[in-house]
Length: 157
Image (cartoon, rainbow, N blue to C red; front, side):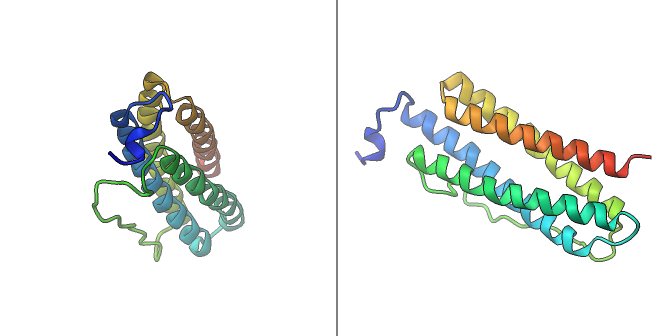
């Protein structure tokens, strides 16, 4: 047995592995959203330029900080970050030629996907007694839901 197997923190090895895998997926999605948000920040044009430029800067800075928090929790569970399923991650940007509206709609879609995954992993963490993940993902959900509100309000008619 490895030292990881001997951890006695109130979570089974199987639970720690499952939660670390869920967090790894969240970490990969957070990195993708970070990169996309940053590229859109650079490339947005039009009447909403300043509003979106400032908003996306705030959001990519928050997303960057989140990657460290998520990765450190994976490590605290005794796993390496990322500990995903080994599939390659790709980010489809296609920022060139996209309107500000299309960029914001794309970010909304990614934030909504992140919220759904975080609810799934957060609920599992709560059920398994991992209060740290439940608390961390509650904070992350708060950020993403506010980001969604701000993005939607920016493009509202």
